Amino acid sequence: MIPPMATNPIPPFPAGFLWGVSTSAHQIEGAADERLPSVWDTFTAEPGRVKDGSTAAVACDHYHRYPEDVALLSGLGVDAYRFSVSWPRTRFDEGRGLDFYDRLVDELCAAGVRPVPTLFHWDLPDGLDWLERDTAHRFAEYVSVVAERLGDRVKKWITINEPAEHTLLGHALGTHAPGRQLLFDALPAAHHQLLAHGLAVRALRAAGATDIGVANSHGPTWPASEEPADVEAAAFYDLLLNRLFADPLLLGAYPEGLGELMPGDVRSDLKVIAEPIDFYGVNYYAPTRVGAPQGTEIDFGGVRMPAELPFSVREIEGVPVTDFGWPVVPEALTELLTTLKSRYADRLPPVVITENGCSYPGVDDQDRIAYLDGHIRALHRAVEAGVDVRGYFVWSLLDNFEWAEGYERRFGLVHVDFETLERTPKASYTWLRDVLKAQR
Ligand code: BGC
Image (cartoon, rainbow, N blue to C red):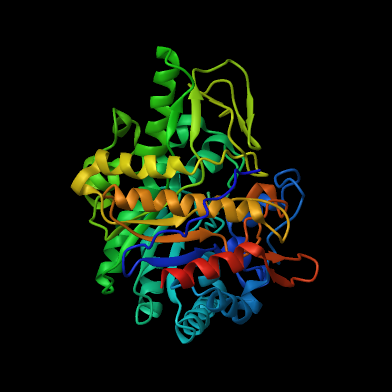
């Protein structure tokens, strides 16, 4: 249980601050018969990949129920809705799958909610592969098609979501699709996603877009002790999580020798990767405590971390955890943002928190309220400390298909009964609605 909440109201954020919620296509849409398969469809079909054996074939059936979900957004009073476009759906029926996003964007605009699409949130069309450089070029072509179709109504774009997790879990450890266990041989997948991002920025600019960002995952990394071996291991983990995907984007360079491990003409690729962006999206959930390798395999929040890794993830003692076992440390969000600002200085564009949230069961979700309250206050302290933060998106609107965890983990402000697909706003929905009202 999270400690009692502060009783004073959440202080006001700067005028024009963007409040929103996030989702992703594969996790909520369903209607698998109206999209081409993605690597996630193939992966979930393999026995043992998803804990409860479920698939995202129906998920929240958002594809058919989007008017109800847009009404929920409008009732919540958010300014913006971050969703993702399913690349394999846009290829369905000779491209007619894209019609769905036309309808969704129209519905959002009619409700006064700004659409903020993410162009890649892990559901790569089956048959494509991030280990192949060509996938970055295919991505840019797809982005041009989407921008052409939606650009008259969409003003804010996100290229890719969390390439760090997609590389680590999908290509290095194999707990996510496409299920590869390449450890450090997964690095080309990182480079090609970064290249895809840069090419997408160019494609979006060519289509007239003026507000483009990325959604990178970040979290403070704390050494398990002051012992040099722990400090070194934590610094390496920090490099993988906090710098491998941020340095090339913001500084046009890979950190410490990693560039030599990347394929292709890295120097000229970095020019593409570092195309200027208009905002920097940060997905934040929790800090990580890291120490020297312990020579054994570790199960970390359901992720199998092999013994050969040059670090080991340790428990953060004395803090509450979510039902996913993730530590709840709101002040780490302030630390993260002030660190990003001191690390990148004027190279850091205005920041938007593109995801923040937690998994807890139940509809009377007081723990989620406490989590969000603590993190929104921590965000405010970062603003007071001079970090230019322009928006905050809660993960997530709906309980959904939580990847390899299936439907057991519930991140939604709205409960979904996966038998009947009935939506029930939780206590946190009402709480957030009131916070947003007070902010106005
Ligand atoms: C991802 C979401 C996911 C959430 C909670 C983020 O890493 O972008 O798709 O559901 O975390 O695990």
